Length: 252
Length: 196
Image (cartoon, rainbow over all chains, first blue to last red):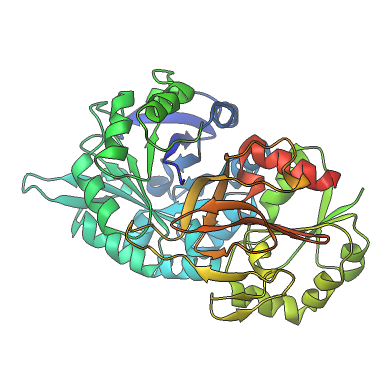
């Protein structure tokens, strides 16, 4: 049976792992390769590396880092941050990334998704969406690491992106991110049940029960978290055992 | 010992090379006839689309070359599917080493997501390729098409339907999952192939 995936996310800035709280403050949490190797050994199902400053500073993710990671870890990993062209993706895949994630650049130029899907296959195109629930009760797409609001609904953009060839959606709720109060179950459920591709829920994980909820209630295919793993508040093996004991399909 | 990874227009070749490095196996990536023919082991990887990949193989005459190989050959993912007879993916005539047919997953009543992406268990393991691998071990899969179960099936998996996780005929082996991305289980399977 296909299992639910647990994905530690490593936010990268200048070759180091960092984690923003609500995308603003940043704390250092170590060497990405070392951390990635530990997670792979502990049973993480995948890893995501996001160059969080890339969009703003127009900086490309360091392909050397990707190459180093690819040499060391034996599970799949996704790289995102500042990717805006077929050439960017080619370089990252050539250096050993399994998938790439696009966010702002794809929103501004949706054809990028079609081009990437055609060139490399839908399986390596992850669309990342930062979304926020506004006072009108709707979830909107935000760009540039959550700094720029759009008037487009999250579900609409997700559907369009999938029709263009996005193979997975990485959904981050800005309302929940950094709060440790649990994932955004409503929007995750909406996307997971309405899209024909896997949805990775992100933002808000604080307890092991939060993961159980996002899998059981919101039907997420995968759940991503950063600081709770980096600061050892939850260990991946304990989390996976907890979920397996609840009858959730998990790779132990 | 010389291991050659066949170079063609399909993804993940680098990942296979890195995985072999991690288990201490030196390999080269090549589409040179001489190199491939004289290899002790040949790996035929692949992520991509069937008809485009077959066209490329034919254009480079790699299709005939692969069929004539006598040493152990391991097809991975699309590589395995191309070793089958026929793929529904753009109705592609493939190499025909395995009689099994390749069809598209059906979402069905469970509303399965396609492609299947993630870790699934493999069972009914019937080959030295799986030496030391326990029944129901998890491997990493990424695929929208599957090879049906048939006489050459040496491992099964299930995603709405039971299908071939691995195939074997004579010196030809194929795995649908990605051993290069399947943690220690995958590394053991790669080691087993190298030790054949």
